[in-house]
Amino acid sequence: MSIVAVNTRNQLRGTIIAVHRGPVVSEVEIETGAGLVSALVTTSSVERLALREGDAALALFKAADVLIAKLDR
Image (tube, rainbow, N blue to C red; front, side, top):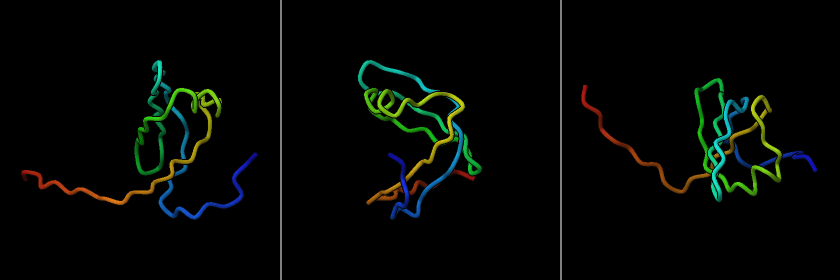
């Protein structure tokens, strides 16, 4: 199965640089043109998708909320 189209406009293409496996949840780090993206996904999804360092990946974002914090200058 491969993705032909997706309705999400918020997406970043990159390369997986690390997969930190946990017993239930794993962290996947993707280097993109916009910088590093880190995602927490189930370990079963990491296994099902066979995610490995060096693989091409697409980070897709869908958020109902955006939080803003004021920073000191």
